[in-house]
Length: 254
Image (cartoon, rainbow, N blue to C red; front, side, top):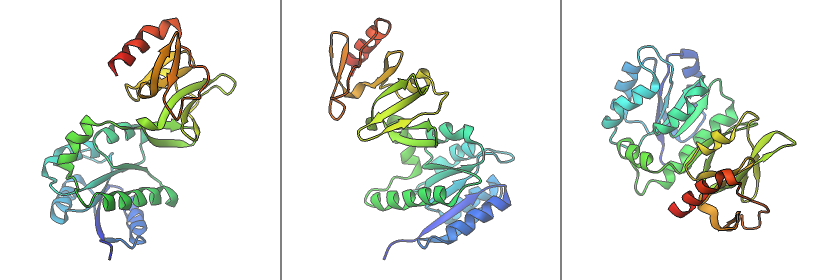
């Protein structure tokens, strides 16, 4: 029989908390859902019931959710996954940096909610052998930033650094594209080359229209980049004079 889980919601918006409670109540593996409407009561609930999953609002009176998480992390000695649940997407990257498991914008649609829940159930099932407490997970995540978020024309998408071979700007469509092994992803129109290179140190610009993942850089022949499989058949990846020294230095360091 599969294990059932406890969830705590901390949100000063009562209506939002009640809606989320109703959605969680439809999940058969969620056994108990508890709500608090301020950080103080939320802290008490978390420490008393030791939930498996915490939905945490960010904009709350007295203390925002990110500071709340920082303040309790040393008290969490059991495996806990945190989903930031907020109407303000400007906090997304900071939330991910603070070891959030996921991020749910409100008002949410059921399909987005189910993606988060299914990911939680799959992840916790896989980690049962050696689960990490939140306290243990913080330094681990600080050391290993293997994932990043990109803003696509459809919203946000989480990727691993090794998923992407290179990025290319399409002059006709006026968009950057991320090229994965079996698909390309159209990024949001206002995305710049600087936005991409700041996602991870491995993303290195080689000319005005192309950025490569240095992990896939196999060789530099003349001023051309040759990539490892599965991106080895990519056509022209020419390094312009302006970027050549930086690409060469990064390649040798890697």
